[in-house]
Amino acid sequence: MVANRLRKNFRKLQPRFEQRGIGAFRLYDRDIPEIRAAIDWYEGHLVVAEYAREQTASLPWLETMARAAAEALEVPWERVHMKKRRAGEKYERLARKNQRIEVREGDLRFLVNLDDFIDTGLFADHRETRARVRAEARDARFLNLFAYTGSFTCAAAKGGARETTTVDASQNYLDWAGENLKANGIDGQLARADVGEFLERAGARRWTLCVLDPPSYSDHGGKVFDVQLDHRALIERTLSSTGCASPKRTRCRSTTATALSTAPSASSDSYVCNDYTGNYSVINRANPGASMLAPQTITPTFFPCSLPRSGPQSAAVAAAPAGSTASFAPRKISLIAARS
Ligand SMILES: C[S@@+](CC[C@H](N)C(=O)[O-])C[C@H]1O[C@@H](n2cnc3c(N)ncnc32)[C@H](O)[C@@H]1O
Image (cartoon, rainbow, N blue to C red):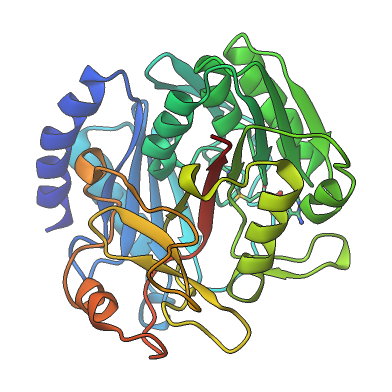
């Protein structure tokens, strides 16, 4: 069953992505509800990730799935990379192969490591967001917070940013970001710092374009960040400390979150609203008519497999009255803020 679906998806997606020079994309994401896996294509490699559950814990489920995928797409076994994802798990390093391959995204190049970590170094589902940042970046002073391997920085620099600052708490990821910048012929400031402390120390420094893409949870240096509780304070802090505070030009995008509530909680007067058509906005609870951040539209055409399906979830969100407890799928929020 999964083999047929994969062949069909690949036949449909690969030519479209190839036409745009895109070498990494999602082929399958729980398309068949009983087959709980995500399967990604990286320049002829397959990353097969099982969403682990008790029912299959004692079965060689992941390998069976991976072999079926490899056979369906005629990918040699040594190019197949297997992962297990468990809800809420904090992942240690998975291996020490230290092998990286380069993937294309138009004229951008990104180094990915398909074995050693749960994530590969590139979030393919941010492709359209990177394109947006690039489109806004001409002459910008660009700030990338929670930068990971610096893919937004590369996009901004290619879009003509005058200068870039890339901030992450991990030296490992910052080094990786440096290599990504180099692979794209770019220079820029790399800052190892906790984002909160970086913003506190920003002083009079100002930027004109900023991406804020926090994890759902982190406990860096003993400081806990929980997107559910802390997103509003983080957004406001970023807007006030960076200078990127014009509501007219501030955009917010929510991605694959699993925990953010659509309903305002007692501790927060803003919440993220996502109708799964690609419209994302942060709404001000006190004055719902006046969106705190203007909505942006992202056309989902090129990532149909990685977007949540329309259906009960989207209906629940649309129907959720203010103050209700309906929740939806997003895992994290990403904010792109720009000064007009
Ligand atoms: C979800 S990833 C960001 C993805 C990235 N924006 C992209 O599109 O490739 C989260 C990153 O936040 C970093 N991080 C987590 N807590 C942090 C903190 N308190 N301060 C700075 N960076 C942090 C992690 O090291 C990781 O690289």
